[in-house]
Length: 142
Image 1: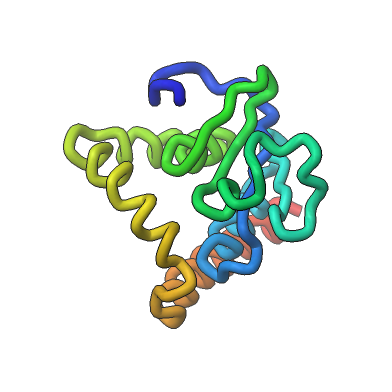
Image 2: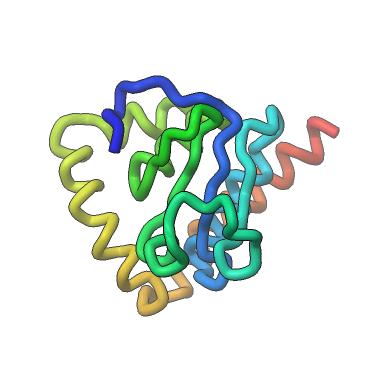
């Protein structure tokens, strides 16, 4: 694992669980904002895993990203770098605040392990709002 302050080399390939509504919503949100093409998305359930940085079981326990230089990022580190890739530096800055960084890194495994048990309505509402906003923004840019 690398430090939160180390440089990220893009493009970054992200391996995620598209069967999880929560994961899929966040990745769709990133996909809509990936205008610079710095992120490549692979559904760990249906994608080619021959170049995956970890076995399938590990990919299902935590999101994984692989930078252009081969560096592997997992969990919160992967997500914060994905947001850097879409130009949202404020997300990693927020998550890496003292106290919040520790909490995020402790909570991530718990949330990831229980992601299929999370109440779907609040998750869908939050992400679907973000997705609608991204779609409107994308339509205005086109």
